[in-house]
Image 1 (spheres, one colour):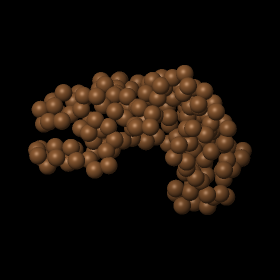
Image 2 (cartoon, helix red, strand yellow; image 1 turned 60 degrees about the vertical axis):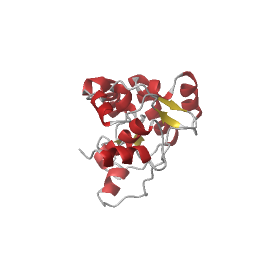
Image 3 (cartoon, rainbow, N blue to C red; image 1 turned 30 degrees about the vertical axis):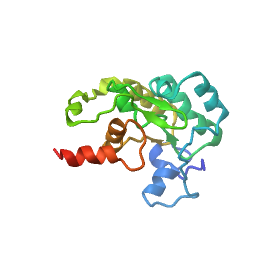
Length: 183
């Protein structure tokens, strides 16, 4: 819900939002909810943007990150905005050739398969994802009292995509590489 439990005379603040208050175990008038694919396929305005722009391209443009993040807030008055992004974005920003293939997921055409390949994994400089910081600055200014939730891929998940070359159910190559050289 969009009901704020704070004093209506004060300016809206994410700290006074239903979501943050519920997380702090404070009384709220409604239970906040989160939808995994909040912006995704359900919104026609999202589909219109994505029809023109690929997933990773949309994730690297501050204007599109901002617009797609705001769409469900505008349409549904959700309890929080979920930053539009993808967990493999740091890999793309670091220079890995990868794509998000519809119906498959992230695909890395030249995976890391041996210990020696690890040397070609570059460090990510925060400046390489400055579009995310720009979008967050814009969003926090536009969201008022609506909290902004970000997310990230865990190191094992990102390593698995690099090693497996794409999604995997058993992570056999990842486990083999880890057990073959624990260092």
